[in-house]
Image (cartoon, protein in one colour):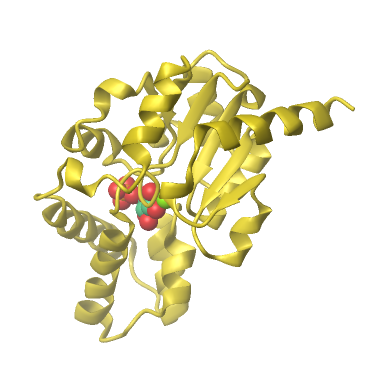
Length: 225
Ligand code: BG6
Ligand code: MG
């Protein structure tokens, strides 16, 4: 049985993923008179703010000065934070409250493994801070997703080895990060590339403790065959 659950935040716990992309889209319109396609939304999911901006600038094929780069990051975050003003427990994605309660009933420890520097504030607004035993700080890990660092740090914060944990993600970069960390990967989302997860689900409402426990046990057995 797994002992820890390492959660992504945007698009797993809260419906905030589209707010990130909306802020980037407004930026692209205002500064570059351009529209960003859905493929760019996918590529900015799970990756840090500055990596997201690099993805967008590459797509637009524009180069900006360092000071402009920082200005764009700052403004995007202000814009994003504005959109979080009304955030409340109503923004928790379907099934997550029950799933977290089930994990806690089974004495599974919970850690946040989000790339977002706004993670602690968002957990507060969702009234979920108490449910989490640790929050891995994305500013303290050498590399962002798809590197495994944040999931390794989150497991360590729980005093566990990644293989004793499940990681839950909606981003392809995030699933790669979990797989690389050695934890059992659980995906939520419809993108076919998420099938690289050990256990893919289409939506958060399908996250069922018993299904995950069974699948994790099989995975553990296979690893030691
Ligand atoms: C991830 C989002 O959770 O956090 C990304 O999926 C975002 O889209 C990243 O870029 C960083 O978030 P923030 O809040 O620090 O800008
Ligand atoms: Mg996410």
